Length: 418
Picture 1 (cartoon, helix red, strand yellow):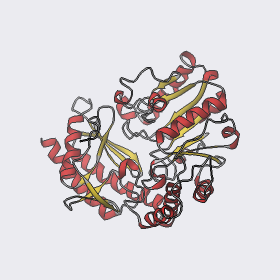
Picture 2 (cartoon, helix red, strand yellow):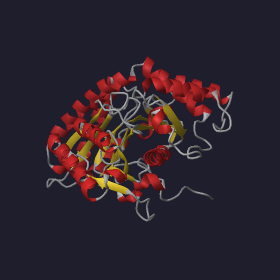
Picture 3 (spheres, rainbow, N blue to C red):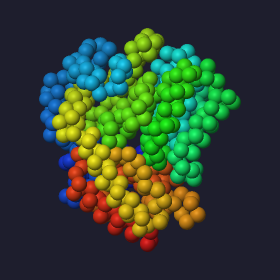
Picture 4 (spheres, helix red, strand yellow):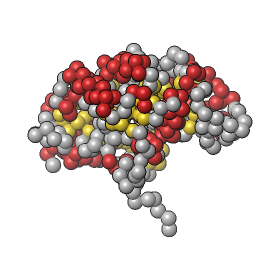
């Protein structure tokens, strides 16, 4: 009898039978508040009626039209619609299936467009598990261990993680930019640097927002030295942070944007976007793939864009994110084991630390598991697994936020008392 790989570890014991909105129902009929959203994927909630209808209609019409063989209308319409929400000037798109594939496509494009080989990433970054993407990932050695040698030419620089550094945000930003300049002086010449990859909010690395001044500093250096600034918006994009793109509050424009996760409400679809002047430098044959731009996934993405606009989900993410954060800070105020609450929009993390300030992954794990027992599904992240993250669907309402906070408070009390 075949079984799943033992390397796959489940965060909760739930066997999902169906999903509806912000809830998952298990095979015994128990209902859970899902504040994981498939790791930020089901942005419009589970089985949103408009997304379901669009996918059903497309399945009955054309399931797959390989897009270097034939073209299909859902892909053309999606490209047009994304042009309405992408940063100005990023008017060329290439589609694949996963965030990792899109990251690798962005790395390939950056090297070909600049004629340079090196890429800079930041400590705590998560860009994927495939070989090139794993080479850019530093959120934990579990992604990189045992598979070397990794892709060469990757330089790791500090991220302005103020809480861990014991600094103010301003101090951490200044430190990180100084260290980046030191990398240019000691490790990778700007003339050898193709791109800097940055997440507007560290994902697996601990849900740490990049300060606006840090992103602005990266933009200034990219302009000065002629390398590309790549915004990995796989998790932060499509309204997750309370703006459509996570980099928006900084006022910068990336050279390449990577998007996935919430793009198609659960269907596999990802993309990179860049200006024509950059995308046209991709070498012939360097972009393609069997399943990229699948017709059903594109139909679901079109419906997702409709729902986000019609239901005001970006604005809702900002409002409900504020409400959730205030509640989390209140819980943290009663439990010193939670050293920091941070994030943007509906992408929030609770960092557990021991009295001496070291990461406390054990208590975070107990809190996450206790929450599941009480009906609230959550995930952990951070190198030590000591950050419990909350990423509900963007349709979440105030009553559901308040219910989740009540369950979280109960779970934390159990965890710190255990």
